[in-house]
Length: 76
Image (cartoon, rainbow, N blue to C red; front, side, top):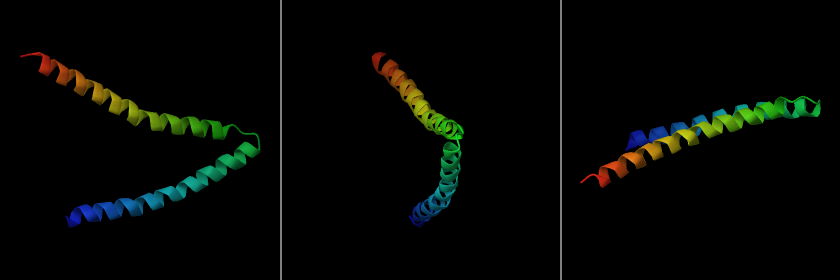
């Protein structure tokens, strides 16, 4: 049980360190956008791409599980 608590606390601490980098990306994108650069658009497209991949993978696993479960239940 204590190992689970340690992992939970470690993930909370790590997430606060990881979010510190987002401020730098935001500042760079905002200053570039104010200067007329299209880096912010590329950054947003990259974020959407990275966000979509886990959802596509989860959907593929769910569909494969559904087909497998459906074929097992239809065969007596």
